[in-house]
Image (tube, rainbow, N blue to C red; front, side, top):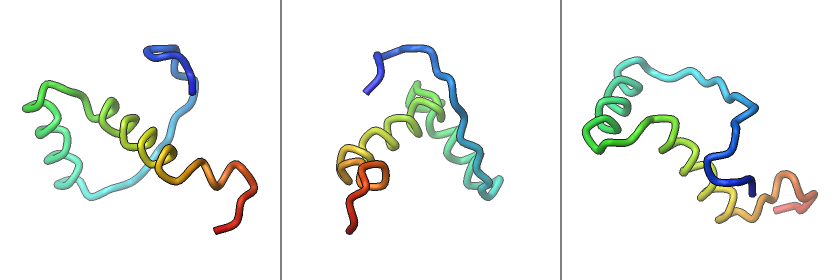
Length: 60
């Protein structure tokens, strides 16, 4: 995986319910973190748990 705190060079755009987004952002703020940081952490965990299967050519 890339360097911690390295320059980010890609974006992921998604649509979600405004109320859900606002609640998530507010909760992140309460927990002294950012929405982007938590989403990146989720993606790292998800890829680690699933072994990067999509990019490796493995079939489930």
